[in-house]
Amino acid sequence: MRVVSGIQPTGNLHLGNYLGAIRNWVRMQDEMGEGEQCLFFLADLHAISMPHDPAELRRATLEMAAALVACGIDPSRSVLFNQAQVPAHAELQWLLNGTARMGWLNRMTQFKDKSGKNREGASAALFTYPVLQAADVLLYQATHVPVGEDQKQHLELARDIAQKFNNDFASEDAPVFTLPDPISPPKAARIMNLRDGTKKMSKSDPSEMSRIELADSPDEVMKKIKKAKTDPEPLPSEEKGLEDRPEALNLVTIYAALTDASVEDVLKDFGGEGFGKFKPALGELLVETLRPISERFTALLDDREALDAILARGASQAREIGRPTLEAAYTALGL
Ligand code: ADP
Ligand code: NA
Image 1 (cartoon, helix red, strand yellow):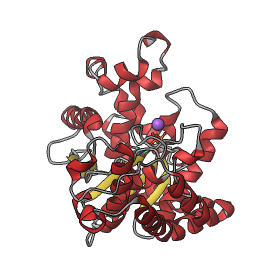
Image 2 (image 1 turned 180 degrees about the horizontal axis):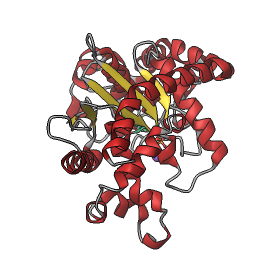
Image 3 (image 1 turned 135 degrees about the horizontal axis):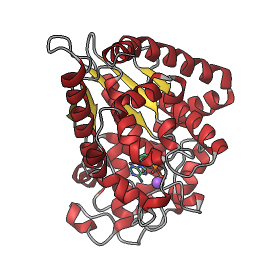
């Protein structure tokens, strides 16, 4: 089993990113058995398909890498790297562009969504980036790729490209590419912001009080939880009692996610209690969970050399793993 997964570089990481995304990758890694491996890459090449700020992209890529390591991605067990440091991704994309059909790409709903009304003004990269995604996984002979609903179509495309390439250019007993199977990522928590409980926690919210950031100190975490919007009612003992109380539901959801419990379970413990009791408990739980993460995170960001070394080592491992497949693809094409 070889799992390959790309991660959009994003900065100002917060609790929503951790509970909704990063923690899942760590769990995926921890589920690998003997001879199995995860490759995690920061999708910096994908980022240039949309308007972007180069300095911001560099910062976000490093921040995401630091966060992954701080949260438990272990570079000695998994291969962690950024795409741009492994030229084979871009090379293989070009080779696969010869196999991908315009008609296939025209059917990709994400291009339609992301280009919006300005189809003519969209970058060519936005149109062909599903082919880069195919290259991302085919390069490593991935057997499994975690995909959410919105990425299913792209993985299908990767399989179609692999199959056509194998049919057109390889002999049946020596296919160049493995067809990867989709795996569903575990269902992740969706964390809302601390001010109204109805919009998701996001780095784009102008108020820092609306989110817990991975770099927050224990004092900041306690203060943000203390100030989080709530209502004067005590917590109910059943989930349906939270139906019209999004702020309260959000805080209970955070507690549940942190303890791997259900909302019902948390209410069994805290039903009947007011926020005067629940908030300090939640704050302490958050501090306990985030303290080691934020310490490691800030230490890595302060030690660029260490972080660069981790990424350079990952990139060199990735280049090694991908080399035979890239060479086989060139050869198959008569190049
Ligand atoms: P933001 O909304 O802060 O801009 P991104 O869109 O960069 O975050 O998301 C990066 C990853 O974190 C994605 O996988 C996304 O699904 C996840 N994520 C972001 N915000 C939340 C949230 N509030 N709850 C759960 N997951 C989230
Ligand atoms: Na976003």
